[in-house]
Image 1 (cartoon, one colour):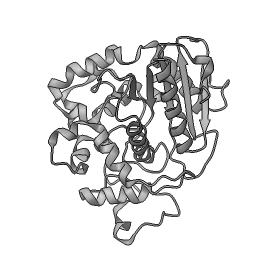
Image 2 (cartoon, one colour):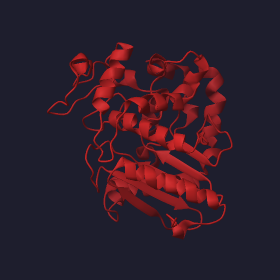
Image 3 (cartoon, helix red, strand yellow):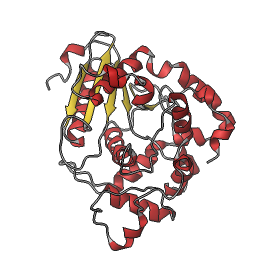
Image 4 (cartoon, helix red, strand yellow):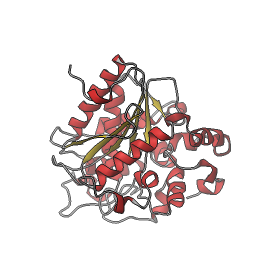
Length: 317
């Protein structure tokens, strides 16, 4: 097998990757598609980017990278820009398990959603149908937002997706999302929003299915920062590029083909410079869990979000 990234190969040197995801239903390249940015201490002043027309091609690329990096004993730090979890109350309602301890493991939810999602090699998928099915399962219009014309749904599910949010967006945010938008002084979109400006709900559903395929392929030998650090070579993070890149993105991205490419480059470099899972932010999050209980573990955390800003008030909708 040929090397995926020959110019960044180095025995034992960690690799930091930012993945800008997309829920497009057709293959496409360029703006608002899937971008990958890579940073390594071997060449800190340079970066590598790749653009993928389909989720399937991005998945195959990462699996090849995982395989090749094992030969050189390199750690992989992969940040994804979609929700790796849902609000705790939604997760509890969706997880059909006889063991309450399973609710603490986010990949249980990834696998459950992956078993429902059909995401073909040409990007066609059934995310709206799955969202309607999940809404009906919990008896609540959590996921919302529809394109025009509306996607064809089976008759029993047609009333289970609303075009607009049935409640305030703040009621649909996880603790980490509330803290992140306060810290960035910028609005963050809810994982409930499937369609419309800033929507990340579709990316989250397809992204969870993507992570399920990725982690199943490596027999779940991975860490999920910051709560599940088990000594594995591959560590996954949730990132929000807006928080890592900052408000200067619009003025600083002219050297790149699009802002998406700029964001993955800066996000990967941020991960490298902040030393991944040994970040003080991660240590603070873990130390705060006794005050907030298991909820943070279920909802996950966003890299770069300062846990010192967490209060018990943030647990209230």
